[in-house]
Image (cartoon, rainbow, N blue to C red; front, side):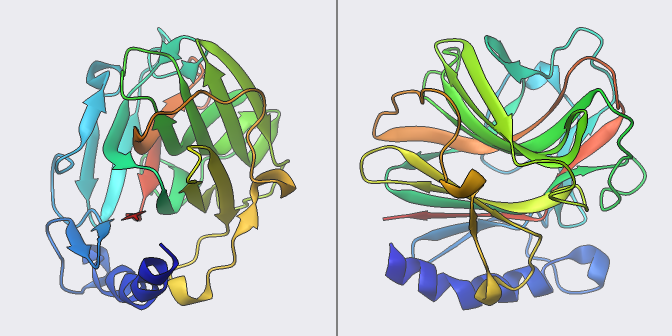
Length: 259
């Protein structure tokens, strides 16, 4: 895996730099695979390409546009987008096998008018976008996730959550840890089918990545689900009822490396 990751760093930097349509460069319309690494820079237009989607109706306005994943969350009066305890909102995922690396670049929340401007923090809102690891049975409430945004009174943070048999354990890394409302998230799927979580401030040059262990350990709170050899890993955007709504979940690129 280390060889694949190192081989990929230079290529990843090139893709990020040259694939954004809104920067006036050439777009790469479809996800690509290089040296066993899957890359999706969301450079097409319209629906996401070849993702497995769970609970699409909870968050219907998810597309790729202008080189980014865009999830418009405009209505949540029934709390339908929530990922907590037995509630499972929308997930757009890829099936991967342990061991793996999954990286989401510049993922987080933005305003409806500009995904790169974070919504203000007015307290009490729970507004997030991030990465979830889910067991293959999508109706089974067993998952782990790392999301970026506002968590109640804690604004501009990263939240980590384990959900085991419909019971969630949650913490975060503290207020104003990610002042842009966005971050890079890395999930390492280990040989023993556990996961280790890293983050950093948004970085468009993979050669200068400086990953930080989540809360100093890379571990999420509570007891983790038991993952089998394959899992779904993908993107989520959600809120708790209507505080802070509307907003968008945004992501520049995902990278998946399987050994």
